[in-house]
Length: 147
Ligand code: HEM
Image 1 (cartoon, rainbow, N blue to C red):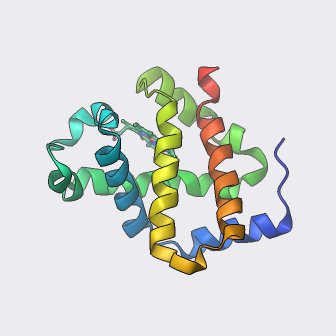
Image 2 (image 1 turned 90 degrees about the vertical axis):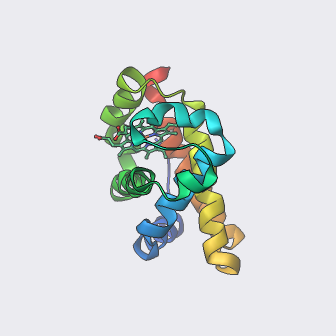
């Protein structure tokens, strides 16, 4: 089981409480689809992803970016059982959507870059450390079904 200090719990809870999901979610998913274009293959039903501009203005991409953050929200509320919380979501991504689990880390990194860009100097090394640990645990839990 992953251990969390009170400080880490506080940082993660505060980060999510102050996060603008409608800004961070869409920007992070756009960044993922633009920087790692092979991730576009899973979103065939989302319509036009022809170029960066199309991706940035695609309402399905924006809505899905927000949905991903709501998905992470569930892990924040269940920090002591992230694996259990994501059991079903892991099955969905592996067995139904056939998402290569390497892509979870890529999206997590895009979220980190997007958040850092928005927070600037407020994204201190200490905050980054807790954030990266949290995302690593989420990525591992989402990939659990694949092992
Ligand atoms: C669907 C979360 C990473 C592809 C979903 C859903 C959630 C979610 C909450 C909706 C599930 C439902 O409808 O019950 C996450 C989280 C991720 C992640 C928290 C990692 C931080 C990825 C990655 C890809 C991906 C990296 C592909 C590159 C999809 C697709 C759907 C989906 C294709 C279905 C979309 C649709 O047809 O509406 N994800 N996801 N996910 N996810 Fe993920």
